[in-house]
Image 1 (cartoon, rainbow, N blue to C red):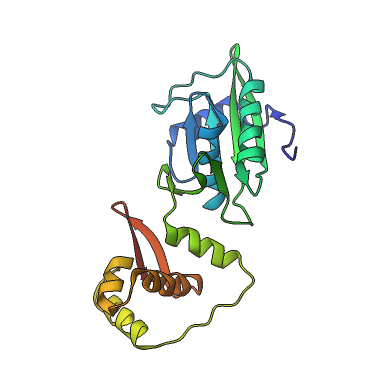
Image 2 (image 1 turned 135 degrees about the vertical axis):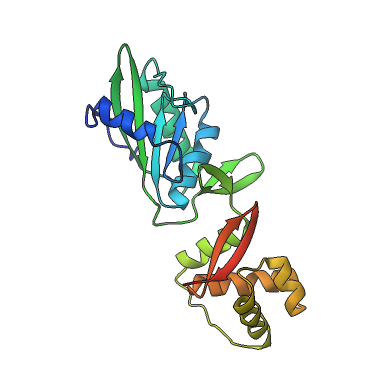
Length: 220
């Protein structure tokens, strides 16, 4: 296993309470307890596919500190999730903070250098990312951008009639979806998606989540 041995008392309980008080967000998730490797795999993979983050085990969503009886079972589930369910396998760091007769786990997951990190499940591999305080399944375009950014193959950019229509549109409107671009350029959805993904990979466009939809904007 690649996981480091837990570090005890590295963070004080006071500092931990201050962190908890800040609330869940892009880089922070609370769990009362880890009930299965499958569920926690989604959370740690989402952190790895975004900007990394901390998982605090032993805290409710309402910030109530409950603690867990022992970190051993929780760590067992974490190891299964990180090494058996995530591809490529993930490395995490864990601190164990005593809380009366119980313990709180502070788990740190780094942003992966080998994106996308996929989670194996019964229906095949799934890719998750962090959006605000949620771990959500990545769209096909999000996954394609991560794969392209990790690939050593170069991407060529051709400024043709389809791209001209795209940039004219984005000079007037703040964003565009794949379906809107497909209709605008009168091309099939697959080609529209490929053009938008390539331009995002090159840093010309930016992919964002807005109202449960994926939108592309000009990068600034």
